[in-house]
Image (cartoon, rainbow, N blue to C red; front, side, top):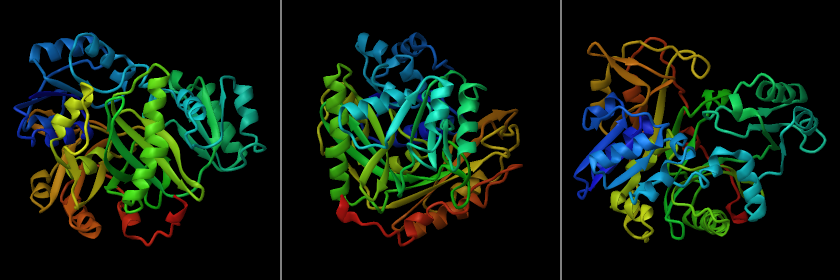
Length: 433
């Protein structure tokens, strides 16, 4: 089986690394890829925003399966074009991608299909949004979300009215997120631990992959602005097998059945972001692809025939039992550039990768890197994800930070508390689930 992986980040590096380990995979190609991927696989230039170009590449490469990393190509209908041409692709249709690409659509969908989520209103006018954040309906803190794609940065948890109104004006008047902020979702702020659940579906059957916990804020202690993710660990110690089964039954199953009933059959990865509230798990949001940096800690846990399972998902033949979850624990630390997430610096040479990768149990996945005159330099906000693997969370965390300490580039920053939530005695009443 020849596999084409679309994308250029840490998630795609993890996908190519994992898929190449399946014995039935005879070749992996990435487009456009990154220097880390290029060390083991061919990387080809490609504009992911042009679905016809993507299909043309898959046809020229005679790819048996195409795996979509980022959400943007899905929003542009790449999966629709592939299916019309009879080519296997992992990812939902453009209509299915609306679960992630439109927060308003996702909230309305959940309301129609009785999927637990926060109370909300959808606002298309500035005046309506300002009234909604006034404090009477939701109180404070209140959550202000841009409707469209905003690179993981379109959410503000406002602690008072002034902050909430500023978030509304920044999105709707200043167009901080471009057209993504033309419409807003205003919702109550849920409380509890956040957990991500990853499943695969062919539109009918559902196969759980694993769980993870992300660290979105830039600084230790979950402080500072939201980012695309500063690290993650997997699996989540909060998600016992029965809890996962309940989430599949109460959330994942209604999503898959509801999309099919709405005439939008959903195939591919489904990333369910949950808040474990005192009233049970509630959906924060959906992603229609694997997360980043969650993919870097979840994919190494997946044992068995992953490539074949993905192909079965793409072709409507998904069955349980081809993949299982390792008993290991993983922790991933993102090394970010100075001034990330606002205006990250780029172009600084990276040192120490060989020493980091020599640490037992460590994987280093590239994200924002490029080759310049034979030197590896930074090329984005999130530069590398350093992943530690061990039988315990403590061992995985120690390995990740040992390796991270051996890498250097000017302005490098990273959180020092990734994975602490896994080792803390988090008190949560699991009986409510």
